[in-house]
Length: 356
Ligand SMILES: *Cc1c(COP(=O)(O)O)cnc(C)c1O
Figure (cartoon, rainbow, N blue to C red):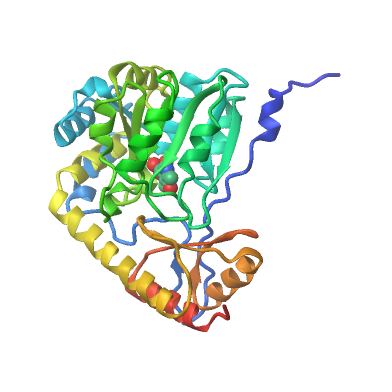
């Protein structure tokens, strides 16, 4: 007897390795630094804003997410036809590949980068083209441009790059875009844009306005601290944003997700305060780790990257002993999120004590 068979590509989908929760140790607070989450609770007023949605959970959400579109459009000065909201930017990546790739079409991206990319690409039976990052963790944009073939439909630019940390400059992005054919969609994944502090930072909203093949993806998961509610948005030219909305999961963004995102957008000053505090902690961590003799790539997100190679597992185990959980990438390195002050202090202790 034959049984139903998934498409062959389904067996090729790499597993998503989620950041582990901390090991519980008696008498010791443990900290999760493995998923680039925001250590702060929701912004003031956000829980209250969500409560009405909780009480209406027997009703479907507003399928058009009308109020959220209006809030995003106003906040970023873009027409709502240029927006598409989704269940996190992971949802957007799935939609982008689904809307733009036929089976076998190629998607070019840096590697190591966000691990959801090859998952979404393989799920759509498209082909991943991984271009190694440079030794300092930056995108090799020359090699990425050179990797574009006549099968390429999408290029993903992750800036700042998760997990290595550096961001692309506007000058680099402009030079790159000049080399990409106009029918190839360039996705600028700005999941950590709020944390960027550098000269010549990318202005992705200006960039999409001057390119018909550029779309920007952002999320409420990181800076806004809403990872558990799954809300992201894309900003791009109307035909691209429209294609994303067309393939979106009906009712994907929940009532509470919409309410939390709107309330968070309304609390810009408090948001910026927290982001600034996390950036200050990032600076403290990077300087301390470097002072302990490590070479760290530039860190423009809410995390730092230790290129440990074969010693990655050992480092992760030593971190666990100190009550912090990091995200190891076997044989490559460990990503450590910027967390609570105490958690960051422990990372600094680890960096000082771990033989390197
Ligand atoms: C965390 C992250 C995302 C967003 O995740 P969602 O929670 O699905 O919005 C997107 N891209 C990168 C590079 C990330 O690190």
